[in-house]
Image (tube, rainbow, N blue to C red; front, side, top):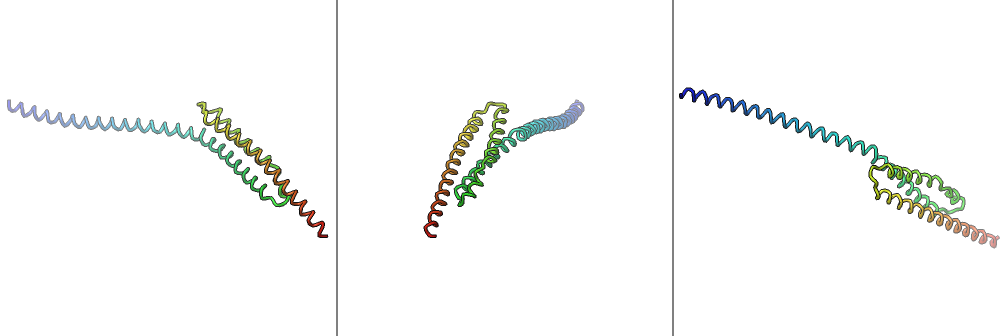
Amino acid sequence: MERVKKGYQKMKFRLTIKRMLNGLIFTGVIATLILAVIGLNSNNELMNHHKRLTGTVLPLDKAARSVKSAAADFMIHNFAVRNAEQSEALEKLADRKPLEQAYAAGIRQLKKFARSAKQSDKKLSEGIAQAEKAYQTALEKDAAIFDAARASLQAAERIKKNKTVPDQ
């Protein structure tokens, strides 16, 4: 009987090691499968974010930059108008059509993206509306500054002309 007990204990011990090894292998396989699923899921999410970035965010950023660039060009134009010292220099600045076209193109791109957005984003459409209002205000102010600068230069030229006539 003792012999049977010893054999049983040996067998039980061997089975325990075998079970432990099987358990470790099974745990390793499960952990590997879980990591593979997590890796695939994160890769899919990364691809979705990349598609969104290249399809929506980058073109939208490009359109926003073109609007900002056009606004900066308007400020530079405004500065040049204010600092013009002769009527000829001022008349060269009279054509602001390229500035208006650049701004309008940027706004058109922003509107296109606002319409194609999957969700109706009110913030984007409100921002575009505010940008258009600011653009109209900038056009009005630019025209007023241009007219004032023209009148000022013409008055200065008349004064200079009248001043030189009596000296002769």
